[in-house]
Length: 167
Image (cartoon, helix red, strand yellow):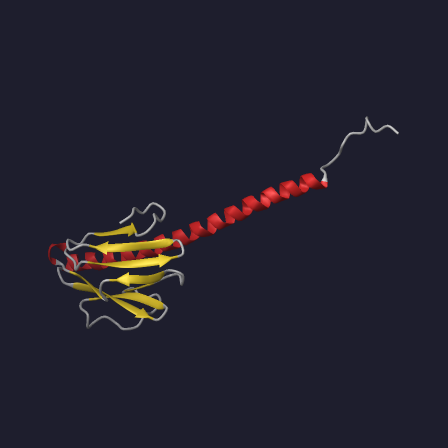
């Protein structure tokens, strides 16, 4: 028998198992990282949309030189913000696709802390009632801060979420 001249063709079972194990470990780690990244994106987008909504309320108050409010309505797992000219005019229910309301887009972003149910924006000097709203999910926690001078900003509370700095 001529065994020395035979060329090997293909891979052995051991080589295939080693390669499949390495690929499975890398895919598992990548999947975990991808899910965490998606969670962080959802949290950041929800916080940014809330910031945009409050900026529109503030701009409307400044444009009309009137006091405008944004009322926070927590309804169990659902919560929304309703814009109005004062506290009494704001609706008490959350409705989808209403131009004067902000309704969260994803169920996993929850409202954790807030200073008041009503945030007031004054038309004079573009000022506002100071306060904050905290949103969180499994990726972290973001805080939307409203200063007395009307400046609004986002910051991360415990750990940095994407490129949003710590408070």
